[in-house]
Length: 55
Image (cartoon, rainbow, N blue to C red; front, side, top):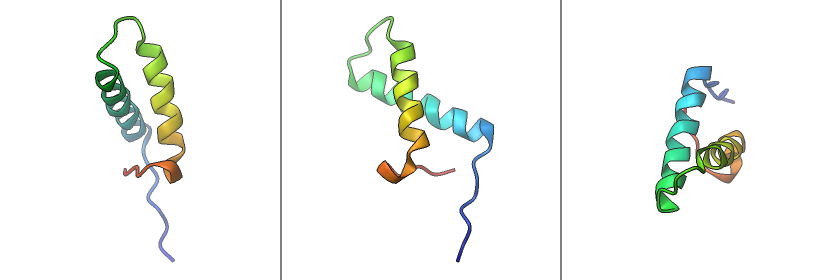
């Protein structure tokens, strides 16, 4: 059985950053909602079984 490689904190941060940006763009780039998209992205990244997340 192969062990999954763990993400470094930097890799995890970058994944959240990219996902938050993607969500923000899909929502029409609204101003003043950056924290909302960041927290949503964190939830998505922390639950990789719901979405394919790579390190």
